[in-house]
Length: 243
Image (tube, rainbow, N blue to C red):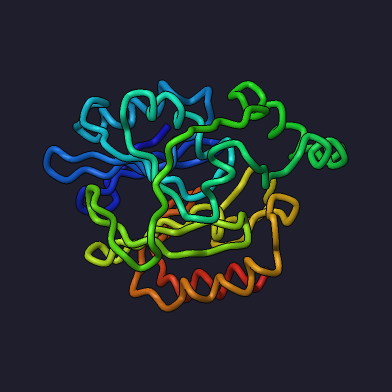
C-alpha cells in the first residue's frame, strides 16, 4: 500500500485492487471509501500514516455500494462514525437492493487470465460479501459536506444508481470513484478510462453523465482504481470516453 499526501490534507491510499482517501483537517478526519473487508488493517494503517488516529475518524463518505469500497463500513459505523452517501445509494447500503457484478458475471469471464488472477486475489479479501449498515445519511449534490476538507458531492449515476464523485475546489481535485479510473486489474491499458462494462449497473447512463465531471475546475484526479493522475479533469473525461 502507498499512502501519499497528494494535496493539502488529502491522503491517497493506493493498493493493488482498490483505493481510498483519508481527509485530515486539524482534529477532524474522514474517509472516502474504505476498501475490501480484508483490508481493514490497511485502512487503519493509512489513517496512522496520515498522522491521525481511528478515534478521530468522524465520517465515512461512500462513493458507491460495492464491497471493494465499503469493506470497513459496518465496523466504522459500530464505532459511531457517520456514513454518508448519495440518496439513491441508501437502499443498497442498507441491504435492500444489490447493484453489482455477480459471481456468474465473473465465472463466464474466468477463461481470461486477467479475470482469474483478479478473482482469486479479491476472494482472499472478502469480495463475496455485501457489507451493510442501517443508518446512512443522504448527501445533497452540490452542497459541501460538513466533514474534513468539505468535499462537494457530484451525482454521477451509472456505475450504480447513486454513485457520486467528490470535488475539492480549494485543492482543484476530484475523487472519481469508479465512474472514471486510471487503471484496473482487468485492463490492459493505463490512464483515464471506464472499467469493464459488466461492472456497471447502467453503462449508457454512466457515459451520458460522465461529461458533468469535465465542468469542474480540477487537475488532480483521485480514482477508485489506478494511480493518481495530474491532468485536467476535462481531458481525463475525454480520454475515458474515447475507449
